[in-house]
Length: 211
Image (cartoon, rainbow, N blue to C red):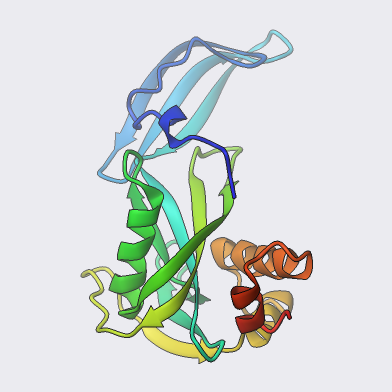
């Protein structure tokens, strides 16, 4: 549902800028680098002409999220402890893939790894910037249905709990704050809005209880 091309994205470490809109960029220095992110310190001229610095976290992966819908309308949720916030979080399946990889391939891999499910039908339905004031991280999200069960295969950093809820329960969890994860919130609210507007396949809208 997006015409935006992934070819516009350059790998982290190759984005060398002379200017960004009204900002001037004199120089940049990578101050931190690991397999997932770079932190770059920019020597800038602000839009008002004054000198300044701008720190940007540049991601080496693109975020992907999946809203999987079972034949009975059940939605699998994944629970895990999130290190940065030191909090437990219930989420839809999500993860990341290299910038040069087809987001759909990454989404299929994450769904399989986190839940064990694979899906016969996929629909991209959301693209958005996650935190565009200090990072360049972008997300691509998919609806998935006609699910087939399998065994999850989490990586060593992941320890999951699982639940299964109706879409109406998921929507209520988002609205009342039990879910704080941004990808899950965006996917849930956008799926609800598209269904109400008649812009989802009829079969999916019925599974979500929106038809």
